[in-house]
Length: 522
Image 1 (cartoon, helix red, strand yellow):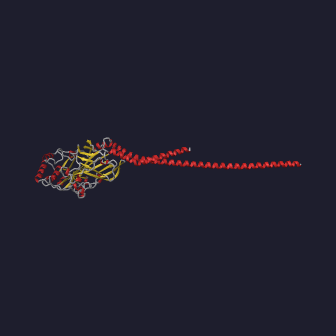
Image 2 (cartoon, rainbow, N blue to C red; image 1 turned 90 degrees about the horizontal axis):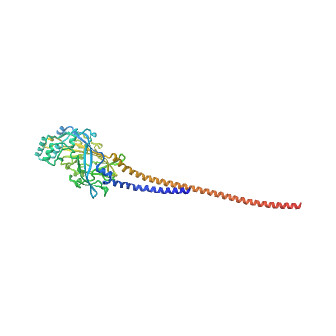
Image 3 (cartoon, rainbow, N blue to C red; image 1 turned 90 degrees about the vertical axis):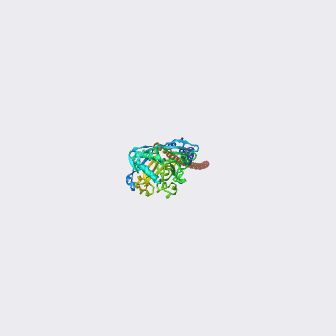
């Protein structure tokens, strides 16, 4: 029995030590295994089914919501009064993005063109595309500012043409036509006599050039040789930098294409990306940690310096000529049209801009943009990009359509592009990148705990075994001592008995002798 207990305790001790060592090894090796799997899955590689499909086809819901600034007092604006606007929307479009002409290169890069298509979602909108709104007429007010420095006869000719084609300073049309284009004899006239002045030779619309179009030829790193470079742009349309701006820094093409980023982010990381629509690179900064349906995330937002002017933020001097902070002059990449980009409702902009237009009410919750990123993989979980298009308008001498319009940056529309991981993609993402690493982490502590438990049980059994042996030895000692005492008593008894026998024998001898003598005398 003692030998069996001894074997069990030794076995448990060995098993405990091995199990604990395995758990401790997992503590150090486990994160390496997880990181290695992340690296293999984040790399742009057709063999990585989940990540490659997400990169190629973006199989998650993606929507563009458009809000129009309906002008309430167009006649008063022509007299120099402050514009009054009312937000109308959202008009929601589902957005389908798909990469085509995908070509992998020997230097661990891949080239592609991403095409985007929009489909109106009436059930998610406040109305339909036949709703009518009034906005500034870009063809009239934009062209007027563009012609401001032209000779007076040219401006008079433009004014005559506008009158001839019955074009006015403000335009009232259905949402669908304003979005995707409408026929205009003025457009045909300008394309004939001033070619290149307009971005389109067909219908004119705010998003006419976006639908069924691509964002240019991107060449990005696959991450095969260096995972820190995955998704980063190597070339855009064959260029390392653009020439829209005044400084080399502002012309640089930095970061990714704006859909995914390199893995293993920290709170010190930023999200740089190049936006063909804004004609420049942008960078978002870390705001806070959070969770989305159990998945940890980092939220990145636009810094206040993103659209700051060169006076408030000198590195932005290259994006000038500037106006108030909060406006990005994109005229240099928009055929010199006086178009400015900003956050909706002039959020994070110079308060002076709010004083020039009635009807604006900025807030971070409604108008701040953000991207929620899973920091370990660099995959966006929830995206909300919100931007506003503004038109710089003013009175231009010689063009009667501008009348007495005050100089103002006039909001036209703002839009939100949002997307989020959901459904089966979210489930797969959660299982692979949250559940499995968590199980691995729990397993390492379970192994350590079991190992320590086995060792403890082995020690307890060993102590009990030693105690039992000690008790047995004590009992045997006591038994031997008792036997010795009995032997001693037996020996004493034997001595006494022998002595008694001797005395008795002598007594009988003398008794017989005395009797014999007595008999003789008798």
